[in-house]
Length: 604
Image (tube, rainbow, N blue to C red; front, side, top):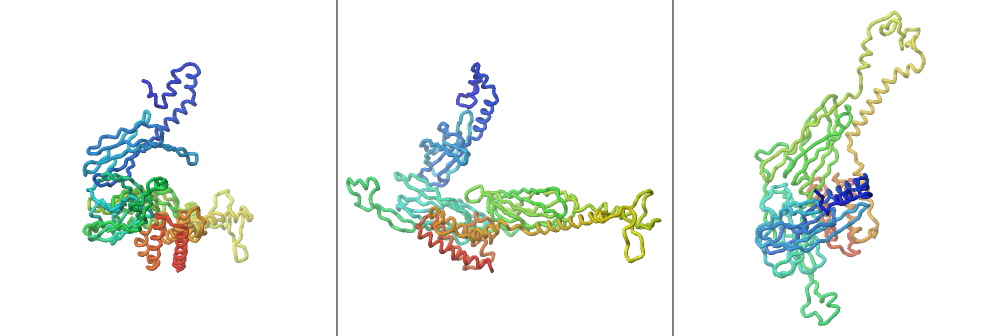
């Protein structure tokens, strides 16, 4: 059996079937190393499915991309038949880039799909052939909503995937803006009573066909969490933009300027407003609620580890608890540590890694410092995570197995006790204990005229006193070091917070950024670093949602919280619709005033 001529193995196969020099070259280690490298390269090939939208209206088209990473040569993928969906292949594009000596390549195959029915579109795995290797994408799904007729030149709508939520559960909200020709769209503004906005993804763009007309879209996605039960409403949302309208009768026949730049258009500033969505929010039931429930809603699993596993009494060990799942995982808290006189527990650092753009799926790491108080084989019970599952509508508990620590005594005092067992007798020489026959005592106390004993027979000299006192000095030193370690473990390490506070005080100079966008990001970083110092969490994950979620509950004055809300609104407006240098200068003055007010809170 011969290999596929398109595979890398075919090169060595042809050399081996040759004669003379070629066959000898094929048997060298260099050729087999090349074969291994080429095989590893093929093993790195992967295929993934990318949809430009996950929710459409009936009669609209949507784009599908099959992205093949790790190669630049693939055939057109055979798209499996999807009932009730018409497909069209738009062609491939290939890309190659090299960053820090690492070269990556990929091929993107683009398709256009249009469903003929209102059923949701289930996209099966798409196989892709790369040489002798076949890789497949993951399945996908596109939600199809009933068609809504619109006569306006621009409109927007909110899309929710549910009508009922559980208080504390996070869910996605999508905002789609349809338009023909606009400019300067602002960041969306929401009317949310009973909800808080969490993470948001970067806005994306798409193109769709509605009837005989092509429309452009901008899509925003947000994570929203219900904070109170009742009949609530998400929205409406508002977007400020400039609509560009063609001026009637303005086209000049035979004008070269119109052919190149298009006809003159009228710019009209307007606000686009969506409809609101009714949502029923229910609270986790009080009946059957476990005592350790702290408001976690979702589905989670937990694991724990400790390092080191073998240590001495008084030495600290780091316990890492990892919680994975779907829901409000970034805000969840564990139950208190069980009371155990064998340990002292101190809080450590927390971290969160999101698996999606909205942070609805991810993992949270919780570190604690544990100091054992007694020697032996100790079992450390991990606090459980009690949560409410919104799908099964019942309380669940995620647990991790107990951790086992081998703890040794802080000092070995057995030799000291053995040395004291010989005391109590009197010998002929007048020592404080009997001596062996023929042995010369190391130290001997004898009475002489005077008030204090003196060093007597045996070894004499000042070094004898040093030898005798060394164990005692060592014991005192070990005790001091152990106490120092215990105190250091009890004191949480603050260097990271200090760096955030120092960064919040280093306001960049005006015009230091390469462009207004860079300067805007630098100004935003200073405020987020102060908030990260105040909340003891990473500035990278701080958004406007922390105002209602953390700042007000922790006692930050209302006027400061209101100023922060206005500052976040101004930042989002400039972020999504970058303004002139004057707008950035005005935002800088607002940032400086806000930081001055925050530093007053820092001193208080």
